[in-house]
Amino acid sequence: MNRIVVTLFSVFLALPGIAGERESDLRLPIGDPQRSDKQVEVVMDGITDTSTGEIIGPSQMAKRLSDVGLVFVGETHTNLDYHNAQLKVIQELYKAGRDVMIGLEMFPYTQQASLDKWTQGGFTEAEFIEEAGWYTYWSYNWEYYREIFLYARENNIPMYGVNTPREVVKAVRKKGFKDLSDEEAAHIPNEVLPVTDEQRRMYKSFFDPADTLHMSDAQMEGMLRAQSTWDATMGWNSLQSLKKHGGEDAIMVVLIGSGHVTYGLGSERQTAPYYSGRIASIIPVQIDPRTPPEERRVQASYANYIWGLPQAREEVYPSLGVSLMGALGDQPTKVIQVSRGSVADRAGIQVGDVLLELNGKKIGDSVALRSHVATWRWGDMAQARIERDGVPRKLIVPVRRARGGSS
Image (cartoon, rainbow, N blue to C red; front, side, top):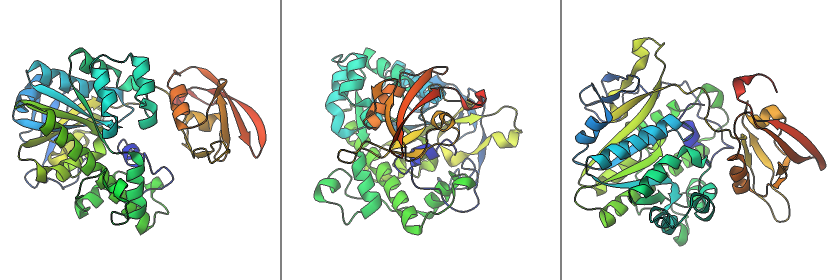
């Protein structure tokens, strides 16, 4: 699965991919017509201005964003280099004297009070992670984002939750817009632009052929509908915070999964009709310098600025690699998905197992699982207590990278 699919699958783990031959998601002739028929070079640790093809640095890019009020900066959630690039964007804009604001996919807008308390110094790190519900609302290790949050607090840069409650997106996927309750509909914009053929082509390119079985047309439409709802809601909430709290020189830097940014077809497309100012996009792209030059080229319409980064081989922080169903009444939560080659897979954890404890800590739900696994580092040895077919078992869980050999 490629780097963007993680974003698209974050609430659809039980669904497989999209059938058909896969195109390169980096070289699709879609998006801005003025750039969609051109390709540009991507250079390691350089930033390509796709309107000119120039290779520039972060401070130059900040200057070129001088008339931009809303900028979407794409990320792969478990790639630390991407987050370091996001931090550099924020730092350079701040140094340039911009009134910087930060929009966060990680939090729904309903958690704004916790973010305000953080930037005002009202939480320690541990308190923020616990009381703001980091692992309730986000699946990924706090350490990936820590430096961004610390920089914002140290420099009094406001942070805004721009997402919507996850259950609302699930409701859109399952029921569509017309059958939403009044309470559900209140959490999304009045209008969500429908999916276009270009978006369908783009989404299809995100998936590997191995993930392209058994999805019905209805499931596909539900997933695309939910993705568009995410796009629209995060763009809308970012724009409302910018208008309400930003001054004349304000710039809202939205940290968001790259799948919501590519080709301007996601949040930018959904937001542009309501904003008279300039919107820009920045997306880091991993490149392998050993590949031929033509394979290090990207469609110019992919983003306004493309930041070349080294190809990541492993995640910096370990994850177990399972998804839990959630407790049903008095019944404990069951494992409903085990990622191939993951720590859990190699330790022998199976779909249907009940995950009772890790290292003596009770695992009652996904929040408890994420919070505990966040303390792990590669090389640790964990112990799991599970129940399989009603029989208690203990498993040793070596926290090793997939390329480290058999466990």
